[in-house]
Amino acid sequence: GSYCMMNSVTPNARPFMGPNMYITPPAAFTHFHQDGHGTVDSGHFCLKGYNEVILLRRLTERHKKHALMILTGNFLNNGDKTHDYFDALYQVPHGDELGEKPAWPTKEQIEKCRQMGYCPTVVIIKPGQLIHINKGRLHAFRKMSPSPLPSHDCHEALREELIKERNITGEELCISVAWDWMFKGVTSAGINREVLSVLEASILNRKRGKMSLAIPEMALLQMAKFTPPIKAVDSVHHMGVSGMVGFIKNGQDIAKGIDARITNEACLGILPGLRHVVKEHV
Image 1: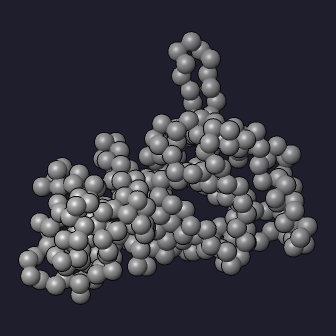
Image 2: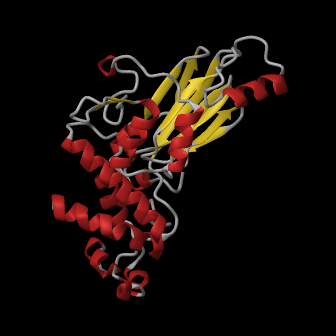
Image 3: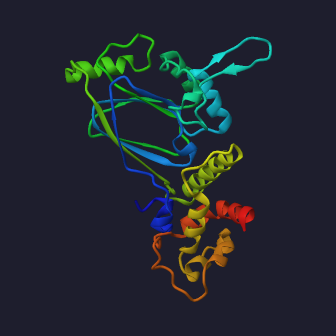
């Protein structure tokens, strides 16, 4: 769409981000993870069956780990204060190296996350519904079956209500379509937030030897090439955008570029991240 950062990048240089179709049996689940190791947004459209979803708000690295400890962990009181939890931040959530998968979160665990301000969302996605997951947000999916859940399961009441409402009696194969993208935001503050979030995630991935799915540095440099003409940028020099003039060719009207919709709001939003990229790589 028009709000994807990769619109400024030539199609041949973009990584494959879907769409992918998933056909999954009931009761299968994917535990907590962040798509593209925190670098991409994702959309999930349910075609058939039901998806039980838990989604947290965007958190810092430290709070992501703390949330995982609450939702999947077993604290060990053995003197050295070590802990054990399901850590898929930099792993593939289905990977064998993660060992045994923890049980689905309980109502008590969800309430602890709520008390910590992690804003857990517990929902069921029905056929014809779409859920958008912002980059860096921990989430988990479970394919719904008609079997009753234990009273402590966080989806127990929602599942029971849905089964009665739709008179579900048998198991149904779950089919959904998912794709990834890089939402760039709309306002200057929103764009800045999105850009810095994906840059931070890519830096953390690089430190851990993990490959990011997104290409934020390339996207930023390409976005800077297609800023508004000089006259438009001059009107906001006093707001700190003058540092981007070096990316614009004098006298050339580039408003016909592939991302000419970028406005002064976008200029202000991408500037801090752009300065970081230039400092690190140029």
